[in-house]
Each structure stands twice: as C-alpha cells, then as structure tokens.
Length: 224
Length: 224
DNA sequence: TTAGCCGTGTGATTATTATCACTTACACCC
DNA sequence: GGGTGTAAGTGATAATAATCACACGGCTAA
Image (cartoon, rainbow over all chains, first blue to last red; front, side, top):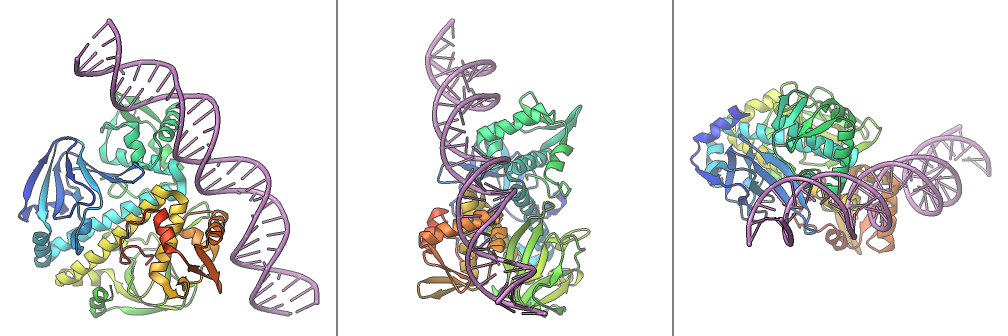
C-alpha cells in the first residue's frame, strides 16, 4: 500500500500535526483538503442525532482521508477525523490534486486502486453486519483490528491499540452492554483474553468461522 | 451521469444481450469484463450460505457493473448480475480498459468520479441500516427506488419496477414477513398504497423524516 | 484519605426482528 | 372447473439486541 502512496508525496501540500484528541475536521465542514496519514492514528467517525457515534475506520500510516468529496460541487466532509494519538498528516488541496491527476495518469490509476480497495472493505463490512447481525459486526471488527494492529505474541494476536468497550461498540454499531456481554462470552470460551488492557485474540479462526469469513486478505479485511 | 459514461463507448468492446432472468455473471466467476448497461435492468445480488439473498443494486442505463475487481491480481466477481428484464450491456475487457485509462486521464478521472459516487451511496445505505435498524433499511430502500424508478403520478410517486415482497426484503436484509408487516403498517398510515401491483409512495417525506434523511440528492440516494 | 469520575460488569425488562405454521388470493394450465 | 404453484398476509412464539438500573474497582485530584 505504501508504494501506492509514495507518488502523492510529490504533490505540493503541507504537513499538519495533530495532538491526541484533536480534530482534523468535523462532518459538515466544507472540504478543502485531501489527506494522507504520515504517522499516528486517526479515528474516522460519524454522529447520529440520537447521540450515538458510529466509528468507521482507524486510519494509520499510508491511509488516505477525506477522499470522498473530491469531485463534489460543494465538497463537504461527511465524517469526523480525530487523532487517536499524536499524528501527522499530509494535506493536498483539491484543485492541486485535480490538476496532478489530470497530468499524471498513473496517479489517477493509483487512486482508483486505493478507492477500489475501500469499496471492497466496505462491502465486506456491510456483508458481515447484515448477514450475521451484531455478532457479525463485532467479530468482524475484532478480525479487522487484528489484521491492522495485531502483533503475534505467545498465545495469539495482541491488538496493540487501546480500545474501551464503548469505542469497540461504536465500531460495531452496538450498545456498550451488548458488546460487553459478547466479549465476556468470548472470554469464557477462551477465544479472547485481556492483557494489560489490550485484547489478545487466542483463536481468530473461531471468529472467522462464525461469520463465514471469505478470507479476503489483509488488504481488504482491515480497519484502515 | 450519462455524460460520464459516453466516453466509455469509444473503447472497443462488445454488446451482450440478456434475456430476463439470465445471469451476466455469478459471484466467484473469474472476472474478465467491465460492463456498463445500455438498456434494461440488472439485479446485483450476493448469496449467503444460509440460503439468504442480499440484493444490492438494480442497475439501469448508464450504470457500471463489475468494476470492483478491476485492479485485482486474480479478479473474481464478488456479486451476481442477473437481468431483471431483457437487457443489453457493453462489455470491455479489463486489459483494454487498463490501457485506455492510462492513455486518457479524463477517462480515469471520470471513473474516479463514478466510483466515488458509489462509495457515497454505500455509506449512506450503511448509515440507514446501522442507525435505524430494519425500518431504516426498508424506508431507505423505498426512497432509493423512488429516486431511481419513481414516476410522479396523481397522489404520489409510483415505483415503476415490479417487486415482490421477497425481493424488497432482500434489498433490506429483512425477513419477508417482517417486511410485509412494515409495508402493511405504512399502508395503514397512508404513507404508501398498492396500484396494479406496484408501490405508490404517497408521503415520501414521512419516510425521509423517520430515517433523518440527510437529503443527499438523487445522485447518491438511489439504487443504481 | 476520600470523594468523584470513568470504565466495566451484570441482572431485569422491554423492544425489535426472525421463524414457524398456516390461510387466503390469484394466475395459469390441463 | 379443478388442480397447482406462487405470492401475500397474519398469529404465535422464539431469538436477538437495546435500555435501564445499579454495583464494583481503579485512578486521581483536592
């Protein structure tokens, strides 16, 4: 993925540094920049009027952000982007990106590839949620986090991002209590365990089986 | 949308004619062609092992199909495409499309625009389902069909595509019986009515309010 | 040291949705 | 006209998930 991104560094833009918790943009803001992440992690979320929060991605080095309104008339961000940890992003103005895309076909094709990958991710997430309910959403989220931020340790895969139950619930569009109960159940079944406040997945195959994972690969089945 | 598609006609390809009910491709088939629809309507669906069917789109004139695996290593269709009525599609081989995209930046940019639009559609569908449950999925499906295939008539908007309850349920990932009950409820509330086997939406604003429609416009809120 | 806050865990209850089982309605064909 | 098939409609029940209420533990700031 990094190789596809490299090309974008040649486009003039600016580096933006963010502290943990700082917003890069809010949904509804008029959209001026296309971003990609140089370092750190960025939450992508959406608010519901009811007060609920829907978490969509946790972008990391090499992820692009804010690409959706690229060719809109009055571009507006439809998500929030919030730094989870201190982060740096590279910001390119839409008109600048437009002109480079017109001049450099290989750049446009790379962007096509990246966005195509995003589509695939979304489809697979949609599938998991729709066909296997909340359980599907939660198991799928765990697998995605493992693929993006998992580290092989003795006993399984450690998800190296600290996540509260509430945050995990936001990713699976679930009530915190429901998520909590399902995690307890998984713990009882020895599928996961907690280690220093992080989740250790002991039996990822169990999760995959339950949601009839199509083994689409880490390129697609991730949370970035 | 048509203007964006016109360019693709200049690429060498072949016309494929389909009878109603005929498959253009099955999920799992190795993918060789990128298609766009010249006439007729094409169902895009996905099967679950449980026997359930998930309907995703009803493509029509100007819609592109099979774009997802365009840049995959071993491209495979991940959906089924079935003609709903007698249809014609234009088929372009992936390598041919690749070379044209490299030569004509404006073509790549048009494809970017189209795929970007698809992303927006998907996101809004995901939102409706996730935040407002099955009711959200069903109301959203009705609104999308109205936007794509609705005709203003006396008393409301007539959805000019014949749809069984089962088919509608597949679009909303709902049990037929649940869908049926919700439609009955909407009929009782005078929000919809049946006319010659088609659905007439008498009060689309009711549907929009219930799911906190963001009024994203027909370009996005459709089923194509 | 202690009060306050935050996150976790859990029981009880309610709301939503699926499933099962069946009836009715209608079109089509012999 | 009767038989067959397919879709619609509906009651009863079960499964799933949300909501409400509250207890507990750990951390921290006064």
